[in-house]
Image 1 (tube, one colour):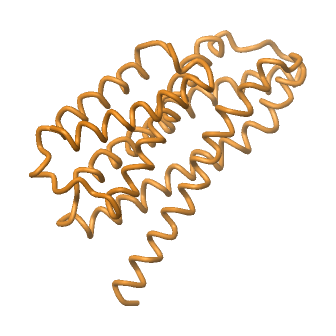
Image 2 (tube, one colour):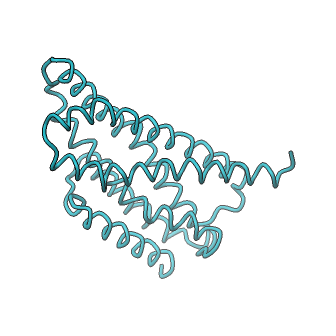
Length: 216
């Protein structure tokens, strides 16, 4: 297999796995979470016991293989890295880590607690603390998804230039991303509480980061 064919297959896999991952991220944030706010307690228990585990399986493994194929792409294109792809890949990596280190471990507690209730047991007290942790990380991933997708595309079609040309802008952008990730770990949802808030915040973050790359 020649290099061009391999490049295309890895890109195809990266996009396919990414659609699976981000599609489920939006499902969780825009559909399932809103449903749970209105659902009866028994319906929530049933959904967390039967529906959520299936969705979370595809969600976390979609994230895993999106990340792996992304690393492969970066690995053999390292000499052509742009400032755009650095910002996009940084957010993508943080999103992947949020899935496996925050969202899934906490959602697992919630799922197992509801499965216990469905079997006639008592809810796990730790589930109450796990829910907001998973929710904040998930909302942060939704926030990051908009600029992440923008920069993945702009790196090839509307690049702001090389890393060396944008060193100062990159530092500022990475600091902003780091602060938002710190909030995901230790902060509060704030405007991310609502669907409108997280969507507006995602596009606002995109405009801010693009402006930083173009103006600094």
